[in-house]
Image 1 (cartoon, rainbow, N blue to C red):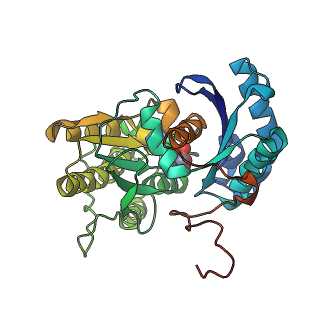
Image 2: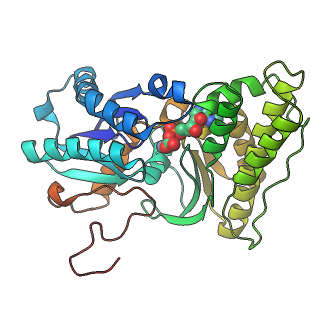
Length: 347
Ligand code: KG4
Ligand code: ZN
């Protein structure tokens, strides 16, 4: 059996084909970075329009690389949410059309859950219970998973996501887009302990995150110290800001581990590409004697291999696939249940 996945939740147009033993036959990701870079951030309408013009070609290329004809695809899967609604609607409509025309099942998947699944792409034996930290441009969330496909959201950001904070500071400093990888590289030239940032604390001791305070403190420092590319402590500042974000993530995860006592830890999402975060995450796992899983960088940022893999996992778990025609997209996590709501039921 071959399953084709489609991902268009944000600014990557992606398609992948997996075999039912989870072997990746092809994985194509078309980035829109060049389109959004002049604006210093994603322009939602441009993202949707770009998905609309490129998705068909991305799927064609994906089939070509897998050496398969479209008739040899036995099931489809697609990201249903959360994400940019216009972008999601393009991928979902395309996938619905394919599934309907070829009379194949369509398995919708959640974007955050598929990021978590990306940790299993290269290692199918992640032990449960597990705690997963999803750090991306739009989300910073922790999940407790008692078993496979069982997701309990235990912490989320109350304002900016970690990637968003990195992207915004990079934009303010005119460093380019996306800011996360740029700061990752430049921070290597600086001293991460040179500027001090307070660790964000939740007054109610919850396991939620907050990054807007760090972002405001960084903006204040930039203005007060007149920080720009020529400043002698420019790299120190970037290294210290990145360190503050990492410290907030790791200290939250440390508390989450103490509460949930998992057997393994997962780090995923675009920001999981960050080299220093990867190292600090592995230190934390060692400290608690836990197995740790971080996808290879190419599977951290948005891709469709994780979409098809989660769909396969759901098929194995016995998920029933009804007609794809009723499916709709949702912009925020968690998805309203059931989605769409039954007639007459108030959501
Ligand atoms: O998961 P993703 O591809 O898209 C969303 O679902 O949002 O994550 C994109 C985010 C962006 O904020 C980007 O700046 C960040 O991941 N990112 C990084 C690195 N590579 C990508 N952040 C820090 N260090 C990196 N090396
Ligand atoms: Zn993502």
